[in-house]
Image (tube, rainbow, N blue to C red; front, side, top):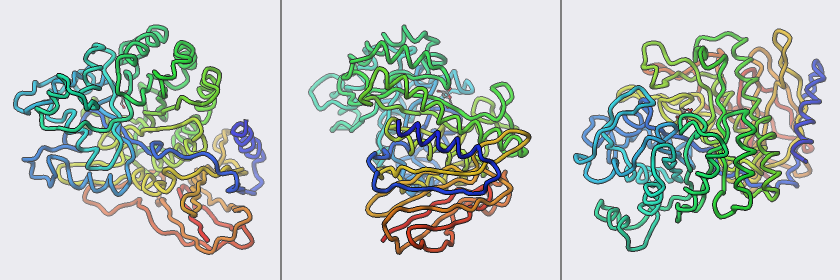
Length: 510
Ligand code: AHR
């Protein structure tokens, strides 16, 4: 109810276009919901150069690596504080037979990646390699089980192989493969996009399959049902209805929503776009709030106590692939527009932390809205990376409720709120993140901080000269994270001017 009121506040106030009275009123005394660190999650699929080449190069590679993992990528992900990593897919997950990826590498069979480019892969990156990577990164693993083309037994044995401390054929096999103790894997997905690439199922059929797979996935502490594609509310309704009161079986349900400037046939270029495409892409990004509201309302009906988490385990921009690259590899550049897409989505997830318990941007390296791009031994940190690095202060912080009043950003008769924000508090430090969606105009905003006096203030900014500014191999960075100079608050208020097309962080403490 409170959430709906806040949203209404933003929408109504934005209607009064022309009144340049931007303000954000913070209610730190009402901070009562934790922003799960998993909202800052990522996704690594066997797709294009995400795993092979992007994360894993093998221990005989000339690229500096630790046990085959690229050191530059590992260091960058640690620095960004990656909290959870979803694997092995995506569509790939429902073709993946995990036993192909364990044991001596020379004995592992090759497979054809039928969804992504039809390439042959040697299975040198499997369960041990993924889970050891997570340990190296200090990140929670999230494994998607194969429901589409696998069996219940195969899924149950994978959970047992990974998590069990018992004496059993699967734990013997794990020990034979060099791992004595089980790994700690909390999150398990029961299929991926079962309405599409994961088996083209109807929700009624999937709901029953979910119950069956979840029943036998003993040892999986947090089971995530395949949720809806974007605006498919019937999927959520049916799956929630048919799993109601199955508290031991379902702890989360997913939602996938990608932002495309146009449509699936013609998505638009990642770097060559005009203001209209900028506007449309950001406007579509804002739809995430509507999706959470509407899927959340259905969940409230069947789960009034809010026990089941909404896991937005695929989100981000999806453009045409870079010219000359394999269309099946989904490789795209990443500009300042993507930094705004990330900033807006993360603010929305924060503001809905009561229901949204995890979110995973697609994908971590070299695929779609990646935080990292690689080319041979070179690595580029994208504008999206810098937003994640900036926003890490919200991980496991307490959400501060806010009321945002802002003017509209208008283009060709359409309009949307020009400012987007969220705020949290952790260890006595208040963190406010703000996006200015307008690429042409700075936005002055008054921050009303409440009754506390804050003596220390610091700020950071991600912006660039052009909407399509991006970081490229062998060139100086066009978009990065820099310190931003702002004045201290006075009498519980501070005024800042958000530069056009920017994402900023303001931190305050006593
Ligand atoms: O992230 C790329 C693909 O998008 C995933 O494999 C699939 O789940 C979704 O359709």
